[in-house]
Length: 294
Image 1 (cartoon, rainbow, N blue to C red):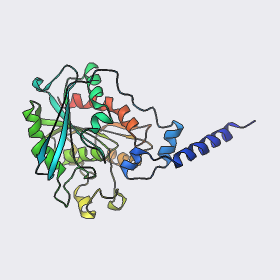
Image 2: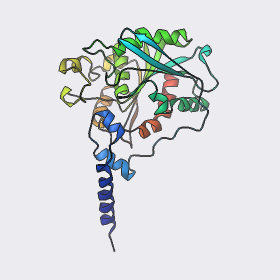
Image 3: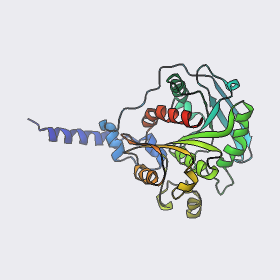
Image 4: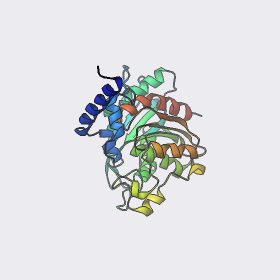
């Protein structure tokens, strides 16, 4: 008779064989090689994938504008909870996509339109979500090329949203992976006068430039200029929720950041995957919906 230990060994070996032929989309986005987190995902040890709520999505508006800050045309999408529209003068939360994404990722990957309706139906006061193209791998800060997605957000996209009738005096920011880092960086740079609350999912954080994903920065000086570590004073009046999967390659760095700042959320079963981000999106939206009205 095969012992329980040998059964588990066989299971792990079989799962490892599967992993050898599979690339984890989320881990590729993070700029790392699939490893233990992907194996645990196969074994079912990283928690259930989030499933889009069975609720009607609200109205969606999309458009584009020529961005001087980015030197290119950028697309955008605004999502409203079911039953609301721009005329309701809703507060707004910016959604910053991950590496390789664009403004369509919020709906196509995360089903954010449905999660937004579900949050409001559960009692959160209505607000809008607004996603925009930040560049596939710009990491939401000014680059040596002159491409400046951060300035695009504040100087160009917020005026677009204001013209739509949304309230932009103080905003929320929600991002995942590259966008989670970008959300924290924007809040540290702009402060609580502009950014009321941040939700960061699996933020892409590194302590050293040599650890960063290729192309994330223009060198060590650029890395140091755009750090979020050591900026607790800049973030102290911004409401923060920072979540990360325990098997995420950024988990250790996220733990370190959480020791510096006061933040809701924590580390849960999960890896650097869309399934994890979907699972955590509901609590993130509930947090942001409350805090942007404080």
